[in-house]
Image 1 (cartoon, one colour):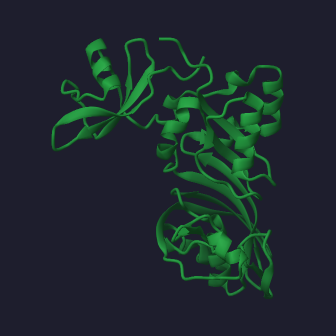
Image 2 (spheres, helix red, strand yellow):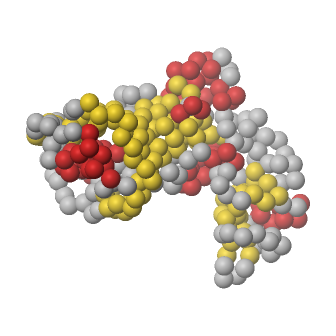
Image 3 (cartoon, rainbow, N blue to C red):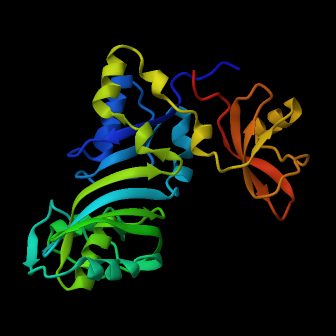
Length: 300
């Protein structure tokens, strides 16, 4: 099986000022590949790890969206904005007479599973319309709180009025909401002034390539050397090597009865080590089948 040299996962360090979709457009332009998407939005002001999928890797982006994330964030107490970040309009100001112990105590309420209300300025849809589109029309609506998990939130620095924290959290967590809610808990108001995503699933900021560096590599025809195989993004899935008859059944979407695995999903390699499919287990029928057929190895 010939490898697909234009399929894989790119880990970029998103620069401030670009939307995540802007980065996708840059990658499309640099690689001349249309099949490009990202797996987890970063706000324009944010920097850090952006997982970009190329080629067949776009077909598994839905699984990558659910990965835990980690962030390094700076929060400005005493100023509340309508977007919960520095890009918004100031809606209130307050004096900040808070010591470090009070900040530590307030942060404790954000650990574990919490109910978080998303910002109005977000891409969440209500009846087909994104909330930020309503917000720009001056419309604010009630938003249902959503359960998110804050695995850890650690105070790294406090020099009033600025709070710097490191956060490890489940997918779907809004750090802007944490900034806003922390300010509310302290009675000062607050908003997010800087945000860097330091990890997304197994990928860390140390692996992230600056966008400008990637574009320079593309001009020199070297961009493919920066691709990661899909396997690296799904390394928490069990791996099974299929025999040739099993491989053929997987590619046809036919049930596979011969696999003896625990769990309900796995990565499937052929005997040459190529990732060919993602399999799921049907509990009722007691067989495995391909949920996604990829068929090609993912890096040159």
